[in-house]
Length: 576
Ligand SMILES: [Zn+2]
Image 1 (spheres, helix red, strand yellow):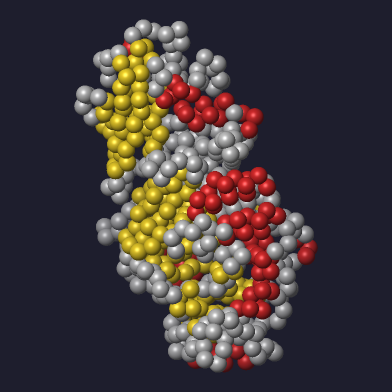
Image 2 (image 1 turned 90 degrees about the vertical axis):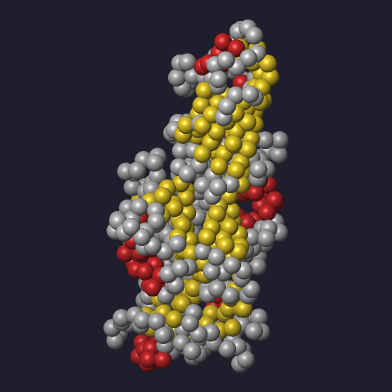
């Protein structure tokens, strides 16, 4: 079980435990004087210190050899303080008995990756007593790590990192069963094996409370073949913990620190944890002061023109309920203040809806552009709700109508774009067009006279045309998206955005209650556009052409053939 080997494997292969210091406090504190060039953390005389070297692993052994030079200027952190290695590659940091020390990978270097699961190994867990036994965690936590090593060293290799690169963005895979891991493999992983993306990340809810699926899940994701970074969601926790402190023991054992950072190319990635566990299964969206201090320290050491990408599980904000503490981040504005006017974008998941925000800054600094916060589509869509397609994979359309899928972040210097990829449709399918007519409002029961083809252009009588809407769900649309449609000889019609449920997914959920997760329901969609058909549309077969311009100025096109017939059929209402 490769990930389970976590801390033990790390100490064996990636770190050299040289000169285990007895009574380490004084012995190592002496090293502080020659340590980091960055601001030294304030410590009292009795604070234990940890020291080590970040070195260039020329031999590839993971263990420092005589010819392996130290690397100067690398950031190393204990989760609060951030220091730079000195000219010999050495750092010194204060620790307590539950600290994870990690290196912040600098651009132009690669970190060791556990090849069986493609998880980066950039940390050392110092928890001499391990996870407290009295917590009786259902899933194994951290084994006792022994005394503080004399030197915790981090291996890096030189690597070519272009300034233009792609990153795969996953969120909410919700591997809640063996079948769900089958879906992830068949629906997503197979097509991505051999991708040219530099690395990938998953923004939490890898699991669905049962952490025992984690090993198989990691092995499947690992087959994509690129380093994969993870943060935990509210379904990846040790719920037996009384509060936040011990709620990530299993996650840490497998993945390392709950929040961290690394550089790639010209960009800085902040992998943040805003699931503040309150005990008894409850949680709220909050970073907390210690984590925000860490972010401040990292940014203090980061050039102001560098693109910053912040990843988290719970959105900074969601329209679903802006006042629900489990769906929004209470100290999100503090993060925005720290980011200031830097070029930055942030990503989250959690809500299983796709959303875009351009958030203002509390400082009201005219220099500050709105901050783009992007809530990503869940990989599991509707938590892998059915029906099942011909491969036996859950169709899993999201509550806001998006197909389940993921996003690709493309970075070029300090600029970025994102692109949505449906797991089941070709990359070119960025919208779904349906026809709707709701003379009696939204239905809540299945109408046996209705069939799904009516959404997609089945013959409608001419006298119903004036009451029929064209409804376009732009899967990754937001406030900066524009949508228009044109039909045959008519002029283009600018379509109106509006929050409503997607009638297509409402119908899918209503028709497939037996294979639907009981909590899945159609939610208001923030990326749906509507316009009426022209009332004088003649009898005949027509083609509705939809043109979308997304926030990055890219055009997307789709079409729908529509048949208009002369007389009212026996079936007279369509459903939207
Ligand atoms: Zn979640």
